[in-house]
Image 1 (cartoon, each protein chain N blue to C red):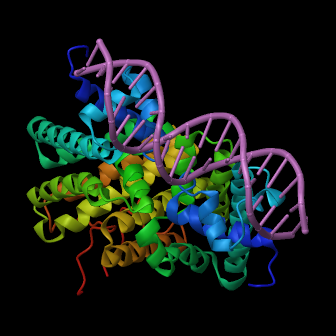
Image 2: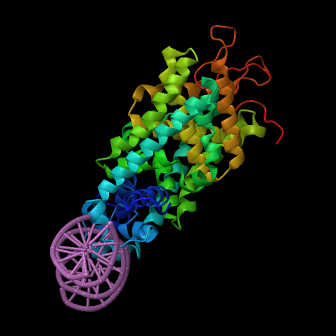
Image 3: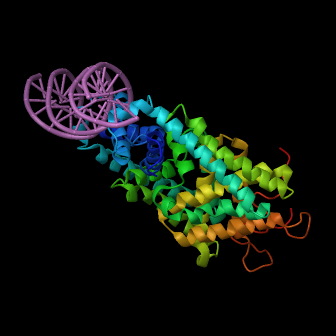
Length: 206
Length: 206
DNA sequence: GTCTATAGATTGATAGAC
DNA sequence: GTCTATCAATCTATAGAC
């Protein structure tokens, strides 16, 4: 931690503060307070506040990419890999409860600000989407892979939103289980007697 | 429009601006520009910016309540009423694409600001939740009604988030159809041969 | 009820000493 | 590379004339 460059420490602090307070509401004073440098010193590392945001987004993109590659290596099969994604909701419960999903909340905030970096921020979503898409394709559902990826992305975003609004951990756990079951229904050999549609139409009785 | 009181015009303008720009990023100057009054004149109607937010939230609660009562009266049965809810995503597509869901985005912003009115803002969610809960109960699913309401609320929030991020109208239409089909599966006489999963399944021991 | 003028604090950003 | 001092703009909020 102490061997990080000042620039890295600024990005680290800004990353956390943008997540917890929002971008617009986080000031140089806030970041300086965490990093323990003077406000003037900022401008040796970044010319504008927007540049800090760009660095934070690049940082998040890199972190996300690394995480997806880790899941890719660790998961024994696509189903297990997708479950890794779904379980973010459980693993990050404490943060999501308080601040929502970092990807979704930054995306919506920048959209409202009509910020120049909004498209770049949405690329974090695209990383997940593309990765999930490939997993579903590997499960043998090439034709609908992207559609399934978007569907799962939407559901996890919705659950994160409800978690933030209602702080109901049992609901999150239940939705996580449902999503895992839904993925499992796509991991079965296709073309059999098991039918599903969209969300998860039908599942065999247990 | 022109026969509205100045106070009402302020709340109207603030409502729209808070939605499109976010609360923190909307200034008195912005609102004054829309309402066409001087900044000083604000304080004759509201003591603080927070008071404007309170009025906006109260306004949204009243609007939502009225809308739910309209759906209640217009819908011939619970299934049709719930479809009214789902179709907000289609009816408000243009706004959602640009600014997301007004309920969800205000809720997450106030959570990040740790704003005093955050709980009040979340009550809009609760209005929908309670209303949906009663519809599912009327469909004969009392035991799991609240769970189903939360599930549907989460899904619509997730779809709104994806709509805002990817601007994919076809995806929204498809998800809307899936949600309607899902509701329909609960409108069938229970205990028959139609099986559903998703939120549907019997609640397990908890 | 609406205005102008302005206070007082904070914002993002700059200049220059060390 | 870090600091202090400071600028100009903007913010919420107040005071007082009309």
